[in-house]
Every structure is written in C-alpha cells, then in structure tokens.
Length: 132
Image 1: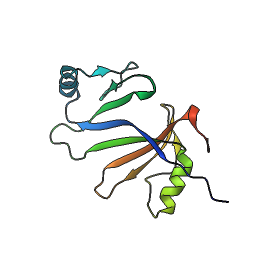
Image 2: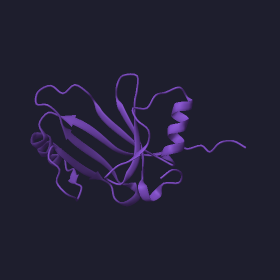
Image 3: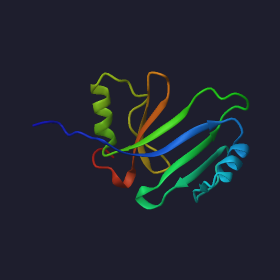
C-alpha cells in the first residue's frame, strides 16, 4: 500500500515586505485594490482579490524603513499540510519548522527556496484532512 500523498491546490496569498506601510497602502488603493475586512494590525495590510473560494490576497508587511532586503512570502494551500511536510522532508528538503496551528486559523509550515524566498504551505484548520 502506498503512503498518502498531498498536492498543491492553489495560491492563497502573496506577502510583500514594504518599507513604508502607509505609502504602500495608498499606492495599492490607488490601483483599485480592496482592503480585506477584519481587525487592523499595525504594520500589516491585506487586500482581497476576487471573492469566495476564488479569493486570494495581497498582503503588505512593513519592514525597516529604507531599502527592503527580501522578497516576501508566497502562501500555497495544500490538500494536507502534514502529509505535504512529510513529502518535502522525504525529498531531502529542510522546512524552517514542523507544521503548526496558527492563531489566524491555518495549519502551516515554511520552506526557503534556494534564493531565500519564503514559501508557506497551509490549509485552513477546519479543512484539515490529516494531523490536527
């Protein structure tokens, strides 16, 4: 019997590190991006693209003022976080941490690509298949 496998299902969000959150928010609002409803978090803004199951997000995370070193984070939803983590490890890759439940309602783990870009693999907690 083969072990269970998991697959990447969709891109959920892109998070960009910005040097001035207020300036960046004004820029994206000028482009027509719509703020995602929810509590305000200092140094963070989220814009919703699409609606319902087809929605994805552009997130802005304020870093140090001045030149920003680093690209940000791509968040991919997978069918099963724990199984996908096992597949990543079996492929000889080293995630930054084991899957964990986040206070924002997702189970996730991070992996850096060879250039240091952060990839997050996640699943909403209510949709988990294996694990927690």
